[in-house]
Length: 228
Image: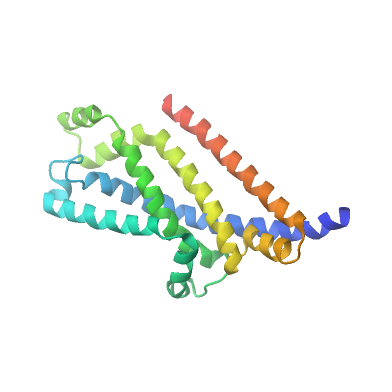
């Protein structure tokens, strides 16, 4: 058993580092573009926050329709199919289609629409009375988004982000099976192909522990934000 762990630890360390790398890169793009798209989905809705979204109701409805269509497409494709379809784009974007950095491209594209919908739902749950009060006081649209919508929806957005992180973790394991590296690659290469259950069990334990930690941290942060 000691020999087995001594053999496994370097492989496990590399797999965890690769998984962390691809998730971290994808998470940055997910937060930035997911928040932006989620805000735009609310702001440009025909019956949304403003009387004339983006200065023109017609333009706002068009933007809303296009964004909604794109987001729905992104959410409808299974990740493994999306990853294969994006191989040419990934090669152009990062110069390769294998490895953790390459995997961060389809991971981002898969997670952004998912998180954007969660942000949209969170923002729509904000009391409309607060928005009307801010508008009556002369608040600008940017101020309403920043100081009312995002401020009030922070706990819900944090919980939505935790769901996105967990999805990214699951996607990364899938990506590892087709050349991305990480714990998915370790489970397939050393566990499944070599019939070594120790690697499979270790992978399962790591996934369970990380998911539990992410959810615990998110729940506590959301409670803290909701009491402010």
